Image (cartoon, rainbow, N blue to C red):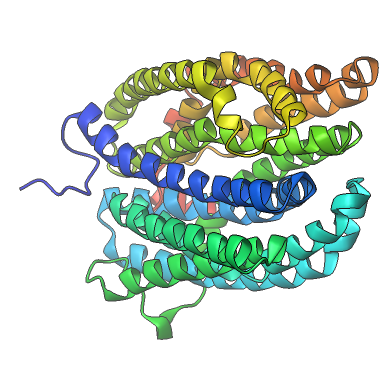
Length: 457
């Protein structure tokens, strides 16, 4: 009987779709729970609080959390390759190293985040009327970063071995918990921004406990024994070799977004609130995009470990078709009903009008991103990390930064800042596609092979 978690066998489109769907639903729930924060704050506290939760604070969280979560992608790739190769002993060492890393990174992030919050917000030119709430939100959020790291790393381990369903179940539980606590703390007890942040931290604690409990009770090779959690040199180096470039890529993305946030802040609180709302509605697509990228990376990782390069090439075509179809549906839904959805967040018509103007600069161009997400997933899955980081660093990050200091200076408007996104997508998509077609990734060796061991050592 075929192992349901083995992605190296079976019909490609069925395996990819069955693996992708739980991740997609999970990321939508994650987006829902972020959106509920904005809805509750916008409706029960006000526009200023909405800007505080989703403006500079959100960008700082994305910068710091994004780097370490991206590092967990190294664990996904290595464990997936080892799973495809059937190396149980190395899987166990890699899993324990991954959990040790998440605990260490979470603790470091908590301390750094709490200490730098006021200075970081001031550096971003955060509007004075949102500063106090932003500080509260960030500091409470950073208190829960160990839980964030544990959940993301645990989910990465499960997805690496082909299990995308359990992370979904845990995320649903987290989302329901967050909604209930949001309404209780904010609408019921009047705890405002502090209540939203506390609800988020407690929900993340629940998801971390659930995923860790599963890893501890499984009988598979990736089982976690608490007494054995520590860093294993070879496996840690393998993961960092892939994870660090991914983390740097995430940092470059978020640094460019921080600079853009500073530009947005210069346009006033209404525009900051609109930018926050845009990220919540627009985030539905990015949640699905991230899910597909994760699915492709795990699928390719297992098949690369098993030496099935032909199956990888076929999966690229299948993934592109699936993602194009998903994109077409989302573009249609958002363009026809997106403005109506904005009334869920606020009754402020000026904020709604500004948000819709931004969304029209993003939504019609989602199709370009299809190429970036699929090809990046393939390259990460085979462990080709450095060159794609350079490409995205120039195509996405450098282009946006240059745009802010040139085009935006000349056209100091909402449209003037928003259009840097589709322009940077197009440049990056063309460059990544050209690099993939060169086929350098075919020369790489999977984790556990003699050639790969020599490179790491």
